[in-house]
Length: 303
Image (cartoon, rainbow, N blue to C red; front, side, top):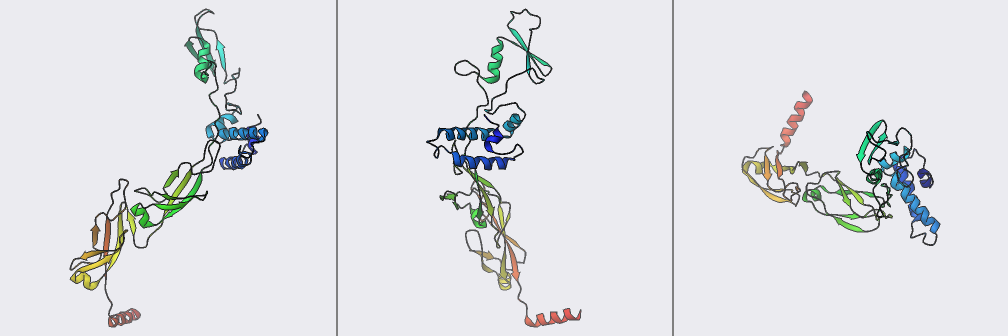
């Protein structure tokens, strides 16, 4: 089999993104659905998939670049080099002893039994009793597809589902989890690009949109509410916003500006479905007398 980089048509210095692009391009061209009548192209598709399986895995790619595994992902044969294993005579025994030893990189290892058992442990036995390679390449799944989904503040607070249009034209109602955070990612299995071993996944990044009425404080939500001076002095009812909509809030007589009033269970949804509170800060609206305004402007100009 040709060098794996040549199979994908990329240089050895190619990064992971370049390797993925090359594979996706070739996989579309050589997919078995398009090459049923051309066995040669079908074999080429298998080579491309095998090459991508190794080069897309950081550990396997490193082992291949160092010459530790071949193009099929199997370990290369043992030799007499510095990293090889050398058979040694058993210590303190005759040539008929069943105790064997191996030396690798200056270290010696002894074991009891048939030396072939050691290789069976290292590489695994096939069903017929023979040794089989331990790095069998598997066809890769399709590529993942990334999405950004804007979520209004109140929908995130209430964990309401949001509709998402996928690249394949399908529309789904995506469940927003309780306790959701801005930038949180959700994985949708099997909603990515098709591949030899099945489709990849969809990776959805949730972008929580700000709301001019609210700010989040842990699982509580804060809001400033404007209250007329007369209502603050005499008491009364004031309409205030909540994530579900406006509600009436009782304002006690003599309420001062800056006072925080707590509405239980009107805050951010937690993972267990419970909710924090809404913290409403009173902002008393003080009307300014026109005559007083002229006086203040005169004093300011004189200063």
